Amino acid sequence: MTKAIKLLTALPPPQRERMMALAREVSFPEDTRIFEAGTTADRFWVIRSGAVSLDQRVNELQRVTVATLGAGDLLGWSWLFPPHEWDFGAEAFSQVRAYEFDAAAVLRLCEENPALGLTLVRCVAEILAHRLEATRVRLMEQPATRTRGVF
Image 1 (cartoon, one colour):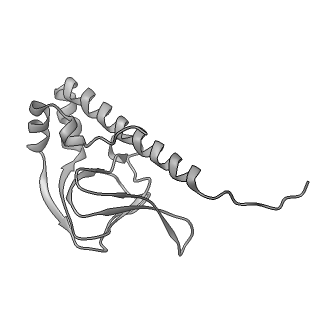
Image 2: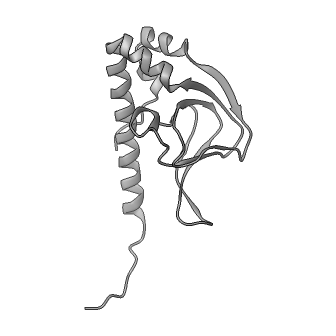
Image 3: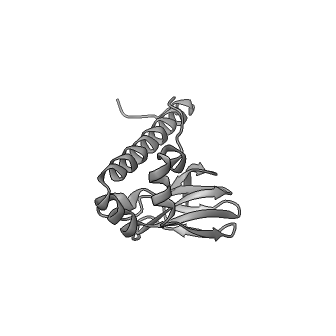
């Protein structure tokens, strides 16, 4: 499996400084819903401490955790891709401290500085590839279920 990268540490120092100029520190108490699938994705976070569960609604009453994120992890990428709506929900699993970034401000910065934009998109793509690979590994580790079908 590829090694997980952390967005802020993957950016070269000058680009990281430009990004951090847009950051604001936020916190979420344990059990706080941070966002819901299908709602507008207009920001993202880099977790400083604590844990966040990403979940997918299975039905009206049930959610399934698809990933748990911790310190240094990127929370949210839907802001980068149309239609700019969250694909998953997110909940603070514990007290969370994070850097919050306004998506519109980051996208403007990327337009003004194409090198930073390219580096940022490559970092997000690498993070997504790692998470996809980790999900694939988890699915392959699941015991096979037998189904009865009509033959």
